[in-house]
Length: 355
Image (cartoon, rainbow, N blue to C red; front, side, top):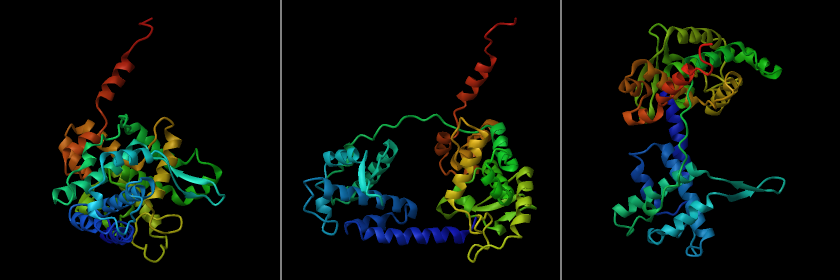
């Protein structure tokens, strides 16, 4: 994984955060400075977007703060925000206007329960910070119930389904004629990328950031930079080695654009492949190989963790392979092994006896 790639992303996030701070009440700068050593720039950026939406709501949608502006909204004013304001904000998030399209139609945003929960978490964090320092007298956000979310069934691919996914990328038999034109140039890349995802459990950000020199085919390993900047060496099997060797033979013949020369995975435009492009190609091949499951790069990561746990029974080993610092995070993300028992029971059920 390229350290430089992560550093560039960090710089972009920090610069964007500085821009957003100019759109937030000045007193919040203290909160974001304090969080710099405890959270990633991406997390702080998410907080900034969520808090900007919250303060705009308070000023434009409530009577209590209609006379305020973002520039003169003080921490004392923030201390006047109550439980009702926050509950009204969560209701507002269900549907709100964000401007108009070119044809004059209004544009709206809808938030599901997960989006509401994330924004409530941001508000709680800000209140907790100023409450702890005695600058507000209470944390009303803690009194607001977290929006209920439905427990989603864990989705993962078993080893046969993973094989079908990679085969879909390898053969391209179900591609449209238009897609087949590009498949000629991307087949080895897509097979190597899907193999690496499915066989190592890397994150999408780790995958797109890999440089050519991070790969050591002789030792069967590669370097990544985990969350928080820690480097790790991950190992791969012979199937992945074969896929990487084939792709690297082609990659060395490609002339990458300036600034992208070291990138392992390139787009059609010979730039470092993006998160969105990876998401799209996983979606494309998953639809070709499995019509019942919605598969994303993260679910390939979950599939790796699940299959490794089923094979080894060692949750601590799986946590280490996935780069989880807390084993409880791993427990939440591998598929429930009860599914295995249920599948075996159904398969063994006889409907018409032995006749």
